[in-house]
Image 1 (spheres, helix red, strand yellow):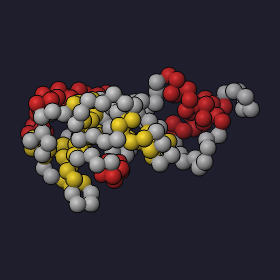
Image 2 (cartoon, one colour):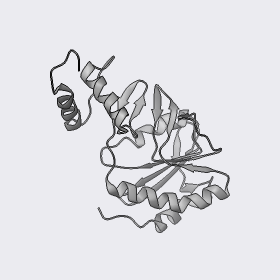
Image 3 (cartoon, helix red, strand yellow):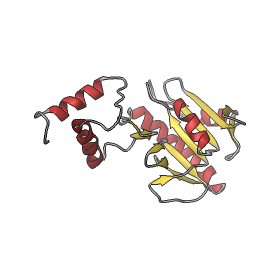
Image 4 (tube, one colour):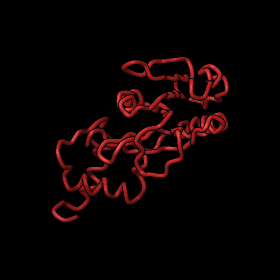
Length: 192
């Protein structure tokens, strides 16, 4: 690492991981830029997002997150495919300088691009301290039709559809013809 003290990148990693939220204005300092690049090279940035140029670094989620994701994928895939939607796991919605990564998405057509302009449905599985609800305005602007929130800690399913100016809780999916109560009843919530 030219121009930095030995071990400074490791120190930056420890500092960033220990803090709840760190905002760096402008270009990141060399040790942070190197840390971000190393995360990319190691594939540790799969859930990282860029919000209007601001990096949001997300760690891998708790195992219960994966448990809920696996269940919702199995429960929704047949219904989505029968209605012409393509399921996918985490995907970049937006463009390289401004994107969000839902835990799961359902698309109107099969797309293999790195950045997708929109999705029919995005699924956000809530983790402690995450930004699931803060993504709503972005998804609305990107013309996402529905947002499904699953909260394993509270054991709650919330389904939101497009209103006039924002997403509104609708009690289920119009696209999948599925009441949220039915999905909630089918979930085998992991222990907290």
